[in-house]
Length: 288
Image 1: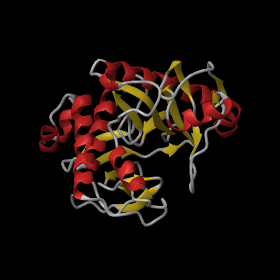
Image 2 (image 1 turned 60 degrees about the vertical axis):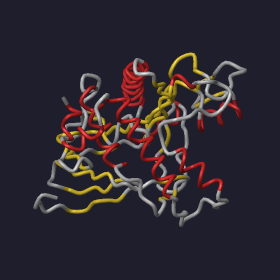
Image 3 (image 1 turned 135 degrees about the vertical axis):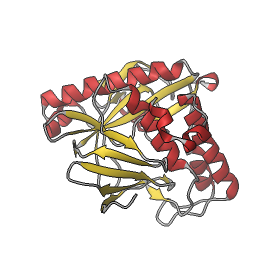
Image 4 (image 1 turned 90 degrees about the vertical axis):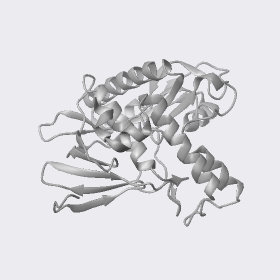
């Protein structure tokens, strides 16, 4: 903490949040990993640095779309000095492909968050166009997808329209960028808040393997789940053990830890085109 008196504010599944002063917080991304809403007892080395570095990379490249909270990256590669925000009560999810809970909703109703979709789509199909499918922020259990009417009840009609416009612009920018590097951005969630003057500001993490589904384009095949740059090896291994998905989770074997770390590092290097070792030596390289 470089000698500062920092007050611990909160612990998330991955991050610790400290108050630096009345206007700044310090976000520290740990190497913890969670699956099925349970934090496992085994860390994934450097995972927090990957998330911090990728977020910093995108924050530096999306400021023209919307201001963000990042003030500085610290030398440990996992700590970010950020502007304090009052976070809004919606997770801003954009989907470009049919996957995850969106696929389940479509199978059940033919819709996602009130968006009517063409019949006959299969899992992982590309949607006719990206759609805004926000969700609530559940303190316990799973977030719930909401439609426009429910979303406007939470944040108001004008703010909802603003969140939709900003989220779609972020998704479109990132999807085009990733596509040029052989990566499909299936979906992503964005967290936005208000600064002390009431301006809309992007916060939390941005376009990381934890907040987005990134698929290798060369292996894309609609009709089932896709390979992705995320914690899929951990999900697969824990499910194969017969674990009941309640706390405490199982310890991970070394080979699963190693393969998961490799996926995160590969995502960092494919997206940023910066060697991960260069980031470890100087985190601010992602801002240049």
